[in-house]
Image (cartoon, rainbow, N blue to C red; front, side, top):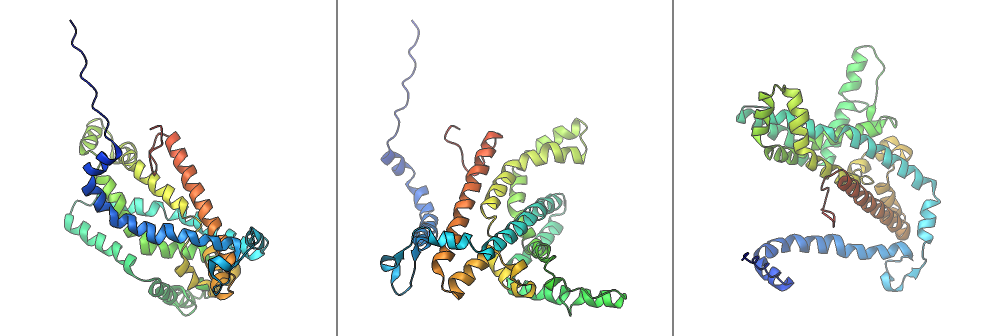
Length: 315
């Protein structure tokens, strides 16, 4: 007589799972409170986007105007100019800056000496901790009208060139500054992903005759692909936020036509002009577009067989 199958384990209730994982849940509590207090509760302030908000009246007594603030923002040429500048800067940084931490991490990972690698890592991490005021000052001394580069050009008999005040070079200048400041810091996650790759895969590839470039293409890049896709999706969510402080410090040098982005547009309309409703409307548009890009890119990642930011319900 055939033996009966063992009974399936009884599914735990929600309270039983909470009791079982109570220690882990307590460890996540500070992070959860941080996001609730500083990210989710402030979302209630977006009600200003639908009001003619007056600070002395508050949310409860300000006049409700529906979508008038959105109509006003979309009807301004300054808004579309800021949107165009934002997208241009974001795309340049996405194309030219995103690969830099990956390449730098691969180079750091190839250094065999631990002492040399730690020294190089310390050097490339350091700019991340320098404020934008200091970084802009450094670039002003190097590339500004009275800086090192114009002096060198003048010494060679060439026309002086002030990159800091050139509107056409402004997106590239921002990208150069971001690359110098954050390329080293961006390697941390990539280096962590490289450590998860099984070393036996490299040994097997080498035995099969694969050279360094083929091992990079067939072992390394597939091994870090999930992390790269995750970072790319998160960067898409921030595509309309290209560095408020960095750009605010340099906006006047190139003028608002080239230096105005959505973040500075919100600042000047909300803080300088007291047009709180229009500023909140633009901020809400940014948030909705960022969320849509993250969800769409994550869905595309699922279709390509990757997890993305989170697992799909059917995975």
